[in-house]
Length: 204
Image 1 (cartoon, rainbow, N blue to C red):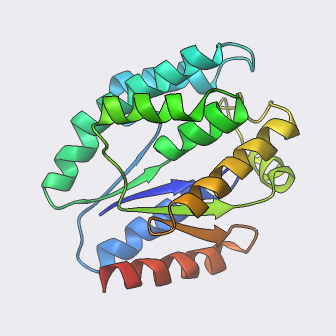
Image 2: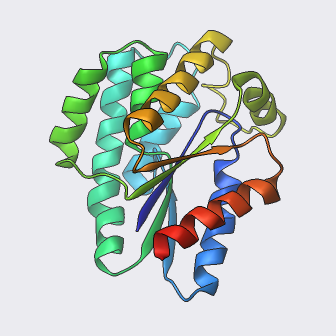
C-alpha cells in the first residue's frame, strides 16, 4: 500500500510514520519511509529552497511548480519502483498538502492545482491517507519547540494555518474512502493506537 500522512505543522507525522514502519515490519512487510518535498537528491535540493527560505521567498505559482517538479522525481524514481517490488510506502505529505497549502493557504485556484497534478502524476494517488488533525495554534507551538532550519511555514500567520487546516478537513470530507482523520491532540501512544486499528482494518 501507498500510505500518506497529512496535517498541519506540528501534527506529529514524522513520529507516527516511524512507529508505523516498525509495526509493519514486525508483520513481515518491507517498508519504505519517505517525505515530500524530497525523497531523491534533486527533490531534496528543491526542499531546501522551499522550506528554509524566508516566508516571502516565492510567488505562490512558482512554489507550486517546484513542488510538482519534486513530486514527479519522487514518484518516478522512488515511490512507484518500491510499490512494484511489493514494498509498503509511507510518505510524509503528498499532493493533498499542495492543495491545502498552495490552494487554501496561498489562494491559488484549486481546480488549476488539481489539473496540473493529474497531468504530471497521471492520476497517481495514495491508497490511504491519514490526516493528523490539530488546532493550528497548538501545532505551530509544537513545531517551533523542536524546529531546526525548516521554519519557513512556521513563520506564516495564524490565518494561513487556519486556512490550511480547513483545506485538509475539506479534502477528508470529499474523499471519505481514502482519508482517515485522527485527533492529533492526543498523546503519541493514543494516536498510534488509532493508526494501528486503521491499518489492521485495511490489511483485513
